Image 1 (cartoon, one colour):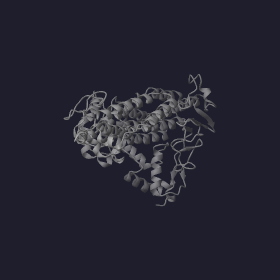
Image 2 (cartoon, rainbow, N blue to C red):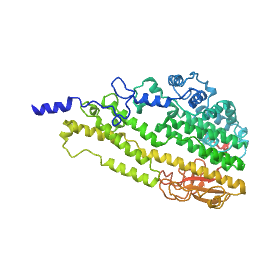
Image 3 (cartoon, one colour):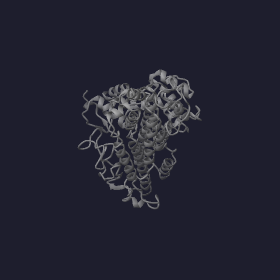
Image 4 (cartoon, rainbow, N blue to C red):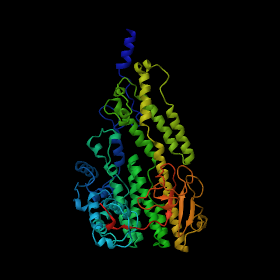
Length: 543
């Protein structure tokens, strides 16, 4: 009888009440009807504090884009929350080009198949089908200088969307960014991992920057380099504004946008159409961009909050994280007889270690710190107690629950930190490319070595953040090769992470590196000059 009473006590008597404290739940307000923190409400209220429609860049972005990329109900909810009228744009008045846009593909394919387009100069003999050709064409207009007479349909698109593109420039000059999640607006108790951000998940802001870069390359092709820079500068600023969202989603897209902007800036530097004063202006504006949200802050807040919110929802049987379901964790672990304070307390200790490691500036020391954490995590396993103890003891089940949620819900922080570091390194490469362009503007040629930039243009030779040695630089023909050795710390001889540059030379559009793209061994590369715009011959296209 005593054994039965013991088992019943451990299985069915509720465990301790979850303690709302900084050690367990991290935040202590606001609280829901169960007396537990509302993380979605806390997060959105913190982001919205001090934001007015006049300060909010998201207002102009949504007004420029309209409801094309978002469900009508979600668009209305977002507009109401940020203080604007939810008036969707007619389909013919939309910003956004994309190589998968069916209407754009149709327009380009029809134009490319026409007789007049065959007479456009600088055509290649690429034998590809019409859809592939249209995709490559859109990719080129966003990355290579082109003239309106080369692609009349794209010129028409720019002319029709000038005012909306200018709205994006105005948006980039605003100091704040707040675009709430419609899933939160519809239900303030939605767990953080379930919250959807249409500005990110529907590629709204990223597409806006692609649109601006299309106009950038048109300006550059028409010999307006500072107008081109204005659009690229807006892309940089939008990436920094987007990082104010502070989720890993916002920061990952912000890094992508900044990398795109670095590439576009390099194209402007490569053009040779800037005066020394204009180059100095661009370098100065690069140096004075608004500060980007640190990934450390995102790990310490958003990622930690997601972990705690997931555990709280699971503990009450309200919701189970997809990662737990995929791993086969039984829903019975949500029994109230578990002491859920322990998974929260232990989980926060692991997050403290991740944050400490993420703050380390030296890449080698930081990698070692993360390796130690993940090695310790592999060893974080159940004690050697019997299976019966684990099943019928509250302490045993609590231990199992703690190990399960920590293993499955701890974020891949090392990948997030690495993406941030790569973004910072590309920015350094772009600034160095600007100084090299300044040297060329003054002397008519690029320097033979980076040492020639010192001390007239730079106080010291630029150092690779990964190797802590000078950046690799080599004069090649009328241009140069400049790169960082990247995260593996090894010189891969100018194989770029994007797969577009191999052995320090540009590959043809659509061409793969020998042996395919290596996602582990690569450098971060700047190669001047950039490829020129090339138009495929319509008559060589077979659908």
